[in-house]
Image (cartoon, rainbow, N blue to C red; front, side, top):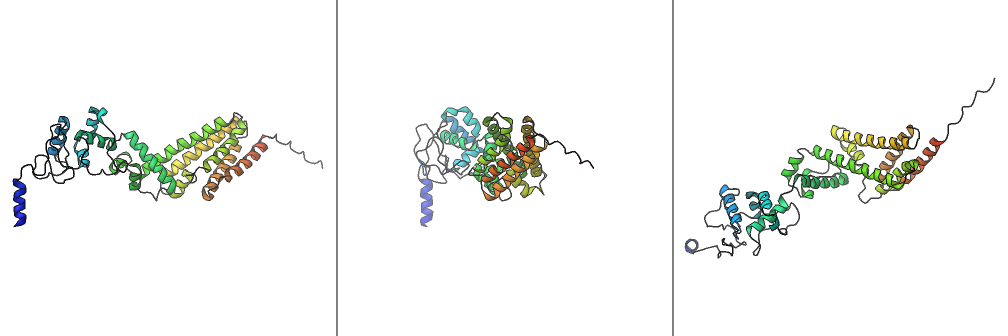
Amino acid sequence: MIWTCLLLLSKLAPGAGRRALGPAGGQRLDPNRRGVRPGGGPRRALGDPADSTRLRAEYDSGARVYPDDLGIQAVADAVDLAALARAAPARCPTGIPVSGPGSRFRPPRAGWGSLRTDVLNVERWTSVDRETAQLQLLDAAEDLFYGRGIQSVGMDEIRAASGISLKRLYQLYPAKEQLVEAYLDRRDGRWRGRLADYVESSTTEPTERLLAVFDWLGRWFGEPDFRGCAWINGYGELGAVSATVAGQARAHKVAFQEYLRALTAAAALPADLAEQLYLLAEGAMVTAGIFRRTDPAGQARAAARALIEHAGQPAAAPVPPAAG
């Protein structure tokens, strides 16, 4: 009986669950209450077209309304955020406090701005262009794949680390193997670019440039996140079952070999010296990765110098056979 009376009183009370009109003419709701919607009446399902129309009208009129029955995440889904941001980019202030990009939004609080402000704030976190999304995904993938191994990392972990939704992740990379390929391809360009930049800036003497390769390896081995060669690691994990990973590993190693051949030719040294220096460098990478030491680079450099000095010496004249 008591509950029946309370229910009747709540229906008869004017403006139940609502506050006075806000300064912009819209209806101000208490953001701390749940189940309240402009105009009263039952809640509609999220994504209802009527809600989207209402939200658009409230935005266009500047009404200061919190659609608390939908929640701020539903506002982001219901309204064309990209169009709103393009229409009023200057009105996009600092972001809604969240724990980080890609995190779920906290419930609205009293005193926050108008719907247009809230929606534009949401846009700053949810609308990420393709290039930015790819960059964030590849950065996260590289940290995880290189640091822990490809097979031990799932796509959901990459989603969490990148702040990009799982749906967007699979739109850009429908299969994990495609993301692995993109990670190795980007790292290949960066790795070879860093090596070439260091060698070219260290000296102009052709023979010393061959030795500078091992100097750079020593610097690389000493980096805090060094975990060995990404292509050797990837081939060890997946080379037998993934033609993509095997192809990436071979392409990277061939490119490194070609680089050493070019340096050897510039120093006017025998072509087979490049293959010997390549094996020294590869052995140093494996040893440094396993033992987490930098000295394999110095040891390989010393062996490389001995090979270079030997290769630069004129060949000894053949000894004539003894007269008999």
